Image 1 (cartoon, rainbow, N blue to C red):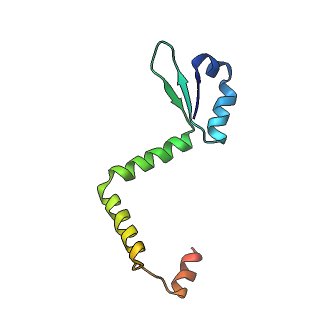
Image 2 (cartoon, rainbow, N blue to C red):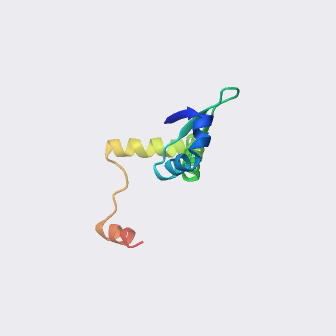
Image 3 (cartoon, rainbow, N blue to C red):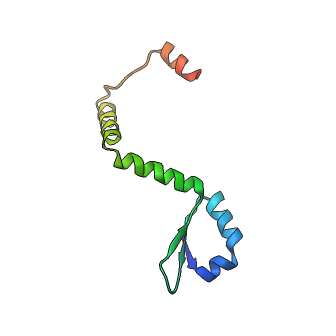
Length: 90
């Protein structure tokens, strides 16, 4: 994560916003008289929100844990070749 002062951010606003969007790099802005803030692309923010939603959803986390357990035991669903062909055509 890039960290810089609000003055440097202001002076390089366009290039830094482009960097956040194109390189998916969060930028931390230090404010001398206030609280810091973060600049990140809308795409990255949405991805973070989805991750938080999943992590807070106990039902989804249980499904993930159950899926991992069946994977480790090698006892999960194993589609036939016909089913795989059908899935791959979707």
